[in-house]
Length: 309
Image (cartoon, rainbow, N blue to C red; front, side, top):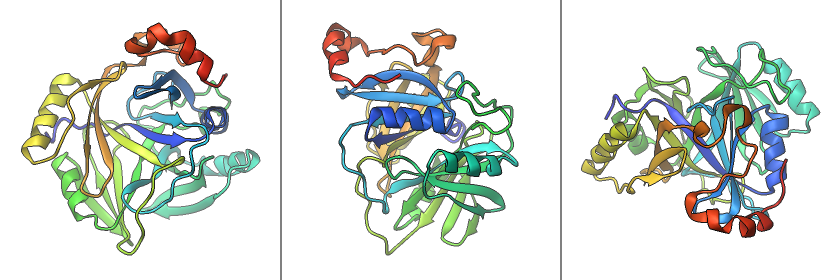
């Protein structure tokens, strides 16, 4: 299985107001909305995807904006911080830009020599911008943030766990290498994949358990190239004792899910077929796209959804 995982594919969070959520990721963070669809299990709720021009795996933040959903409670057993990569030397721009946009929780620090800017999302989410090499990635500039500062994709994510040992073993089984430790945080890094390659495990043995709600990461997805690789990963996980779902068609990728020892929901998602399967690249994210089983109910679904630009 080790050779198949290619780093992160996407991160999915729950959210409150759909328009506030859309504005934050496009107007504030300068990402492109690459898909506007609905939650497969709750078609009265949007599923929004934000990323680079093409929705490249390793760049895509997705959200379920449930409207009046109560905020989640931060704690252990969750993805605590979602980290975006930005060009080196750009954190000064982001400090000023986010301040102008009214973003709260701004705090600079560093981890393992990497400069970071931490900030809050609109639902109390924990985010960080991390200065990194572009590694050939190109920021989306259509939403007003320049190419010299724009978000390149994910840097990685930080989990908060009471005991990180079992999750660390799982990551190593998936092909991640255990790296340096600073304070209570240990880095895991995968090579020969995409640039969204780091997972940091923060061990907080006395912290309370997280309660999911708006602002909580629902699941984190890891990339594989295709369905054949996904099936090999699924078999390896099941042979090790994990309870893994059957393969599910998510229109823009195929997905399997399983719960980790630390409580975080993992997804393994394919890089195929991509977000341009039903929209031209120039018009990604503009029209409401519905899974096939909901298409006969388009008028009813559209009537129940709030309008977003």
